[in-house]
Structure formats: structure tokens, C-alpha cells
Length: 527
Image (tube, rainbow, N blue to C red; front, side):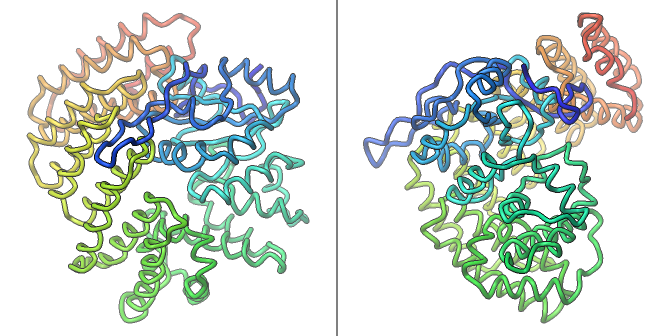
């Protein structure tokens, strides 16, 4: 049976994904036989390395875990997700991960499967990728960090497998001041809080919770205290509106970390995440800010050249340099723009593995766009359309670049082409919602186009088994809200009335006892 603990009770109210069953095994990307060839991105996890991915449904997997007294490893992703492909290229293809997988039941869950979103609501997973470890009895142990390197990931995975209690219980004990074992502190330091809707820690409270944990770490575990304190600062920097300056202690912490190459490398995922926001949080404008930014930039430069990191991670380090360089509205230095261009060229030329390539091109094009090098980003993306098995992902990026240029027609063309090319129920709803949002933002007077696209989206929702769960539900609710706002601003009540009637026919076709039916019926009701 799929676990039904109070924290994992099936709910039609949350948003996300999961596959009802494993897919038929797909081939891995073929090995590059010639330096001029580039493989297409392969669409599935199954078959990577020799990981024994479970071949049955989710419920059968939990039953097998219980029968074999093995933990269950749940991988939640989508074929178009860049970071999912990064995980496939850097973790799931490793022989040591495949060897470790013999000790648990590994299950692939895809958000586009017939009940993917319904199961996503059940497990309270939202972002791709999410990886969860369960005990043989179905109790959730921990949510694993997808951003750390493979060696650290495997260490945290091992700690999770041998953990005596779920991390959520460990967190509660730590916040009450109770003594923890060293391995429990390490699990907390590397816990994926951002991937856990059920932890009971809302985003606005997370910085204080992490800071409290950092202060409670035993003195003989300074590495973990530093990591938790840095995570607290990173979480605080993400808050809107921007908080007040964090103070001298925070600046000294950052200075201490940047002085240590080992701590910079050990906290790579945090060092590249929000450098511009953290620098702005801990220093006022002026010489102190410039000095800290320069020091951080030097650390990032080292990471961008570090051969122990993946190509995507090295690009991410350069992307963080771009963000830092543009702090307080500064212009991007020509030397950095040139270094970025050379690094992207090398990554494009040398990346052969299809999984890794999807992540590399996404990361490179995104950084070029943030750097204002839109033409270079477009050239990279357009070339990849011919090679990728999920070109619709890159079409959306091309649309975003056109929007930045102010070319509304081109942006809408790309958004529409992306929707047309997209495959999979959840993906098509998401891409359709994106096209409608683009129409409302860029062509608000084109009521016929907006109405036609929304009617098409509702038709597709009616054919999608879990259209009103998790990510699907989020897309439809966001679309409905945007339509109502558009209607109010543009006096289009008649259009909304027709669309409500269209949606009503979709709702009535759902079984009377289906939990999706009230969600569907209230889609246009303000939330």
C-alpha cells in the first residue's frame, strides 16, 4: 500500500507531480562515436547505468519494499527538466550509485504519467527533481538535496538509509534543544527544506529556523554550523521584500567561508545560488560591498575552473559571477562577457551525453540571457532545437528572449510553437498556460486569440486524468486568475462567461465522487 501517514494524506489542494507507474525502459543516449556528432536528449531515467528501477506501479513498489524489508527511493521528475537531466548525467549513471541502489527499491515517477499529479499531491512534491527516501514500512525518512555533488549526495543517502527516525522528527527535537547524534546533524544540514511542503516550516520562517539550528550545532561540528548559517542567509536573501541588513556577524561569516577553498568547494551549491542577493543583504552600498563582491567573484572564478565539478556546475559558477558583476545596476565587464562566451563554446562543443547536454544548454543559454547576450543565447538555442528530443523547452526560452527584446510577435510565436510541440498531459497544460499568459501580457486586445487558446486548454484538461491536482491545478488556477484580471481591465465579461460555460462541461464530465470536481467548479473563484 502507498503510505497514508498524516503527513502524506492524499489531498486535492496541493500542487505537484509523480508517476503512477514506472515507464517502459527507454534507451540511454548512445555513446558518441565521432567528435562531430551530438546525441539527442534521451527522455527517460530507466536504463541509465545498471540501476534496477522498479518496473511496476507506485503501490506495488511500496509493497515490494515492505516485503523485502528495503528502503524505497522515490525519484520525481520530468523529461524536459534540466536539473533532472543533470541528476541523470552525474548521479544515476554512476556505478557506485547503481551498487548502492541494490540496497533499496528505486522508483521513477514522471509528472506526465496518467496519475502523476494526483500522486504528487499525495507525496507533497512540487519541484522537479525531488528525491525522497522512505523506510520499508512507508515512513518518509528524508528528502535528498539535488544540488550537491555526487560524492556528498551518496554520503547523505547512506545516512538516510541508516537513520533511526525521520528528519522531520529530528528537526522537531533539535528546535526543542534536545541532543542529536552527529549523523542527525549532518542530515539536517543537507536536508532539502525547499522540497518539503509538509515540514511545517514556511518560507518566511525558514531563515530563522536554519539560523537557530546553526547556533545549536555542537562545537565539534563547525562545518555543519557554517553550512546551516549560510543556508539561513541564502533563504533570507530570497525573501520579498528584501530584509534589513543582516549585520557584521553575517558579513564576517561570508568572509570566513570565502577565505577557505575547502569550505567554498564543500558549499558549492550555496556559493553559486544567491551571491548578489547575499552580498546586498550583508553589506551596504559602497566599498565594503565592492570588496566582498570581488572576493566572492574570485572564489567563483576558481569554481568555474574546477575540474571536479560538472560542466553545468562550472557554468553555474560563471552565472553567479554575472549576477555579482551586475549588482546595483553595474555594467557587465567585457572581460567577463568574453570569458562566458568562451566557456559556453567549449561546453557546447564538448558535451556529448544527451542528458548532460540538455542541462548544459539550458544553463548556458540562461546565463547568456541574464548577461544581456540575447543573440548568442538564441543562436545556441536554435541550434539545439534540431538535436533535442524536448525542443519545446528551448522554444519557451526563445520566447522569453524575444519578450526581453520587446518583440511581442516573435515571443508569442515561440510560446505557441512550444505548446504545439509539447508532449505529456501535465507538460501540455503547463505550456498552454504559459502561452495564454503570454497572450494576456503581450496582446491583451486580442480577445479572440485569448478565448480560443483558453478553450483549447480546457479541452485538454478534460482529456487529462489528473488535470486538477498539483502542478496541473496550479497552472489552471493561475490561468483563471489572470483571465479574470484581464477581463476586468479590458471589459471582457462575455468572454469569461463563455469560458466558464466551457469549463462547466469539463467539470460535469468528472465522476460525482471525484475530488477534482469541486476544484474544477471553483476554478474561477478567487483563492
